[in-house]
Figure (tube, rainbow, N blue to C red):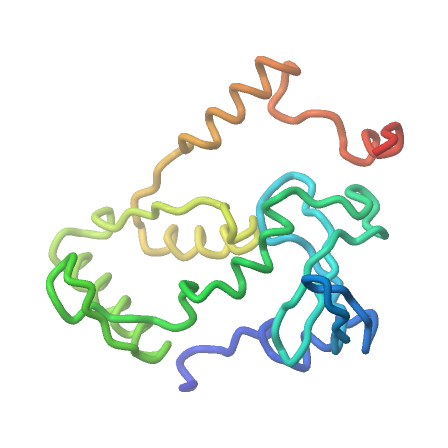
Length: 202
């Protein structure tokens, strides 16, 4: 990469290796015994309140299995279907792995692969052009925590704030979730997961 942009440190292989808790672990995949090179302890990337602990089995630098981390103090080895499905999402042939720039008209499906530096330069150029013509508020941040996690959202929010961009308040999924929680238990925030886990059998 050029010096304009920093590498993403947590994607470096040596950093991932630091979180390996076991190596050369046998695991059953589709009825066959496979030896995973390592098991990495991490958390599910969704923004649920639990932040479920995950154990990720890796072989030949490919995720082959994900299961709940039994040592996680709150979720204690349990995952929802989204958590288990992360392995399919990671390995999906439709997953975007690099930037694509549209070369044809909208809907034609014509794209060409570009570098990350080219993508960043393209976005910066477009944002500056819009701001120069219409003002900073012509840029709208339309993204929420989702799968970006709350820390990533805070960093992006600071960028949009410095730009003077417009911002939406609330979202359909958040507001409906809050209304459901308030109507059910009287508050947006329910019982502390730690307290709940201490009194639950499952």
